[in-house]
Length: 74
Image 1 (cartoon, rainbow, N blue to C red):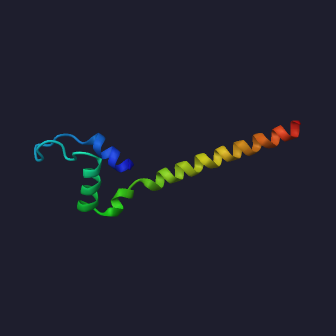
Image 2 (cartoon, one colour):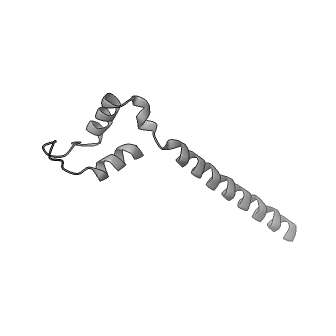
Image 3 (cartoon, rainbow, N blue to C red):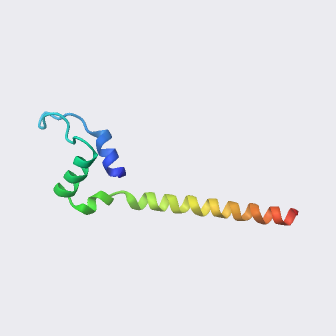
């Protein structure tokens, strides 16, 4: 969905295309899947997954360390 959102935000009227390139998110989704490949919808998902995984790892580590510290102080 991020690819669709980005494409819709970045579209500009073109002299070759009358009006906008995409009418709505469904139109964008269908055109990207048809004109490119269905796998192109997943472009850019791996860096996001890595970022989320790292963020969750840090959060869990901090929560675990905080919990251990709270138990030790009790």
